[in-house]
Length: 319
Ligand code: F6P
Image 1: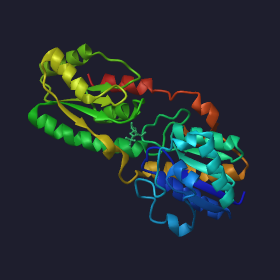
Image 2 (image 1 turned 90 degrees about the vertical axis):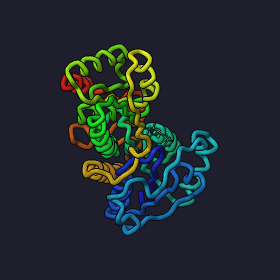
Image 3 (image 1 turned 135 degrees about the horizontal axis):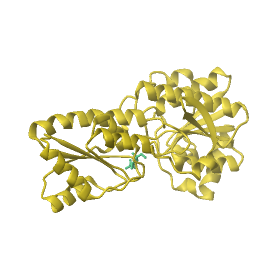
Image 4 (image 1 turned 45 degrees about the vertical axis):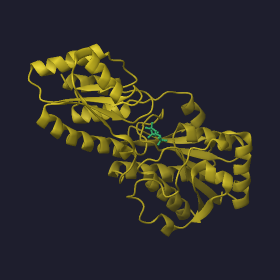
């Protein structure tokens, strides 16, 4: 294999640039050419592809977002769209591909592998919702962004003796809410993996009031529903006023943490090694701080495991 491509797809995540840098430099270090495919699968279809040199990925390890841009591409889900992509790969002489993204992006990678273009997936998403890996690139940075925001909210919550409801991202996965809740001592953590009734939440709020608590943070994972609906339900049930903060896309930006940069570097380099060994259809993962690989097809049939121990611990410590 002499030429490989790299693309980012789906929602961006801090650390994607560090992964791109690692793929490009690990490739060049091993004597191959690396091509950047811009705008995800959309750029593959239209041939928005450029050879990347060592200096093209200089000064990006610390930057959030993705220098290759990203997109969610419906056309690539069709046979016709994929054929157009294959034609572009042939035109540029690209023989293997590294796809940095989430499970949707990996489905495209599986198809490319089936069509004769070995593809390796790197999990990049703030959601941490990919099965088989302890962490995805971007999760740690997003978590730190959330914690920074909640620390600030806590200051004003205490001053005004208010209850705050904070909604965080994560799609159907409660990891961002759960880890942030544990790290920030939130009184209530609402995640899609565990159901908690409004009655229980109101009971906890009342208990807190009785023991003189000055503030209260309720963290809501977007997979549960909207924080505004939770606020309305609390108002309807207990006539309690709350303030709502929806953190939104601020969680997707910012300079990646050291953890995400290192993880991205390790994963990017391993992806290149795998392609050069003739591997295909694999996803890079981290488990117990070791870089490991799984069959992407296998990953796609599983569900990310929710960490019940951490959830239990968060509850235990927020009595
Ligand atoms: O998958 C990352 C993510 O930020 C989710 O947490 C969120 O639900 C979604 O993307 C938002 O997507 P968009 O940026 O397209 O609105």
